[in-house]
Image 1 (cartoon, rainbow, N blue to C red):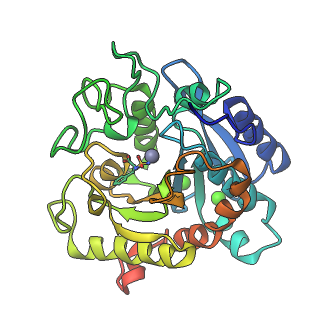
Image 2 (image 1 turned 90 degrees about the vertical axis):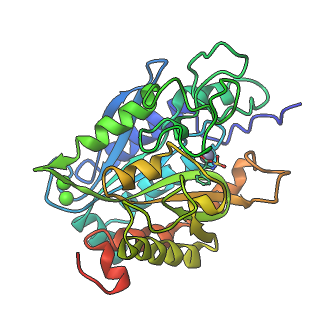
Length: 324
Ligand SMILES: NS(=O)(=O)N[C@@H](Cc1ccccc1)C(=O)O
Ligand SMILES: [Ca+2]
Ligand SMILES: [Ca+2]
Ligand SMILES: [Zn+2]
């Protein structure tokens, strides 16, 4: 039997209300952008955080995205913690103030709202990972994190079987959610330049910091030079030292194809990482469903890592002592 749903986790309406409250409390620092709709037509939102937030300024942009996998509810708490901390501490914490003044920070707290709502809808969790697109089997949905169009369906990194939890969909971009994220990220190109310089896709669980590529065990391949790999490794390792997670290339865990990180780096040149939050991988007792009461500890645990990450956004190569 499934574990009882913990009401302490933030569901879709509560997430929207939280975003609206942050914007209402800090109207010059935060704004809510509707980036598209999910399969079941819920608005997908991004919270923008920056000084002069209503103006698209020429400042490096950084993306945090969460809850692409429905059952990974702790990631929503992580995203909302970051949005709250970056606005409420502005003017108080000099590190936060200078980062918010010099960057445009985007936070997408719930990439799979349909799946999240389904997982939280009953007295017990449903163990839902995928989105809510019917696929003719009892295991509804497509894995949005296997539906992106970089090396989609290659290399044994996803499943062609509809009932699989890593079902890749009928084609790349067959999920509305991946398409919404793709089109929004592409909209951040100005004058042929992608304004988003860094991104983190937040997952649970395993306490890991990972970088591309996931589709191959090789580190240096077309689309990843030594300097680019070393930069990912330096930034990823620094974050891991701060939050106590384990750093490594994504494929070190297992091969994935069509995930967000491979596309964001491979197609858009965004220095991209996966965070796997609490608990550690062998803690299968709590696994995807720790009590919501761990959220304060497990979100603040990543505060410094997030600020360090933001610090490299103007020139990620500086992390290996090089310029762009
Ligand atoms: N959240 S997770 O356990 O499903 N892991 C994610 C993220 C992930 C991506 C690349 C390598 C290992 C793990 C997945 O899509 O498999
Ligand atoms: Ca600004
Ligand atoms: Ca900008
Ligand atoms: Zn996940």
